[in-house]
Length: 580
Ligand SMILES: Nc1ncnc2c1ncn2[C@@H]1O[C@H](COP(=O)(O)OP(=O)(O)OP(=O)(O)O)[C@@H](O)[C@H]1O
Image (cartoon, rainbow, N blue to C red; front, side):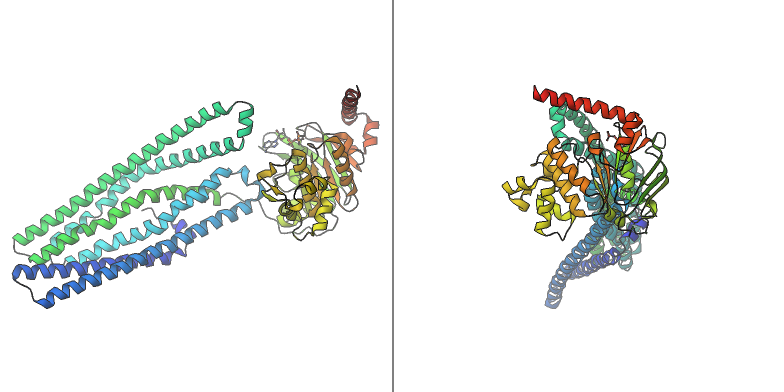
């Protein structure tokens, strides 16, 4: 009952703590039995007349010893509980974390961030109770009635037997509730994570929601979700309360039956007053552990529902991790007949062929949505389910180890992540051993040094996602970090799109100067940036439709030439407008 072998084996080191916990609880019960016997003995003597002084003192000493033992056992069992909870938290959170690492940067395609957060925080907390309280109680609640039966049967078998036989009625009642509860808890967790998802998304997009005055609508939407969650929570609580009432009825009814039987045995003259007293005092002890188990049961069921979710995550198929190392200093990149689809229905890339020699400057152009970023994502190993072949330095991407790919290729998108902390911390991500001079050098190249000198230099503190910098400054910092990374291949995907034209031209000059030492793949909607490229690939609807140098493509007079003309006209109008 509620024994998940896989879960227990996942946290196998907690087994010894569970055994220790059961042992402490059992010792405490044994001490209790000894105390009750001593008290029973005293009452028997009192009934028979004035007991001797030794009996009185003996009873007092036994009671003190019992209290001391129970106190030690209580501490011991709490300690065991803590140790097993600790190992559960550590193990499961480590497993989830490592799984996320193995899933790699594409983990969000399979599981939402809020679900991972809830699973590893609340879900693991629920399992802490399962290991720390439920499992020890489960074994103890089996052991305790058997021990009590063994002891009481020396006094009288009928009440001991009735008490023992009534105990399984509690788990039977729990099992009846479980069938209904399992479905309900599955729904409860689903609703809980759905609410968390919406909450996180709305919180992150709060500014956008305010701008479009959509916050009220979203708030109503969240109210509806919260109401659904409230209803399901109330159902869960009602179910828990009802099952507790049933368990109490069984437990107290059973104990009462035992008491009545022992009184009947006393009246029939089958047992002594002392024996009757012992049975009456220990009757409830038969049921207390099982009753306690029942109260942990609902938390444990929550934990089980959470563990299903955790195992679903842990069982997600992992992208195959290659082992081959890209060790070539200036690797050639060869893309042959590559096709790719996100949903297996619509092909986003179709039969792409590109040759990118080491140290070259290659550009990819095309209208929005033609598949440029998707191609960059494939080169970064984010999606591996493509057909055809992509080789970096002669190694097929699917065979390359993620670590060596990350060392070989640096990607700079239009919205790079800047972490809360100092400028120095963020730059050191690119090169952990970088000296101050090297960092300043990189900042000079991206035109950010002058601004930072007016602030606190490398120690300038940044808010989360660098919200205290302008969009352009943020992007420049991301570029500086990328330059420090010093990888042989760079992919710039609209990396200068939110930078003013003057700075863009200067940064583009820096990017072009990488050519020779590094392979540069530049994706830009502004064709003026692509002019110096060794080769420009023009894409349309997921296909490469033209390839050549800027001049060759202009001479060819195809889509590239048309786009160029259009952009030139727009820029001329822009300049003309400025002069007027
Ligand atoms: N994660 C995704 N899941 C499903 N479809 C996607 C995903 N990302 C992109 N697409 C689709 O793939 C196509 C190509 O998108 P991609 O981002 O590669 O285009 P792009 O040329 O880089 O566009 P832009 O210049 O606007 O950034 C688009 O039709 C887009 O709808």
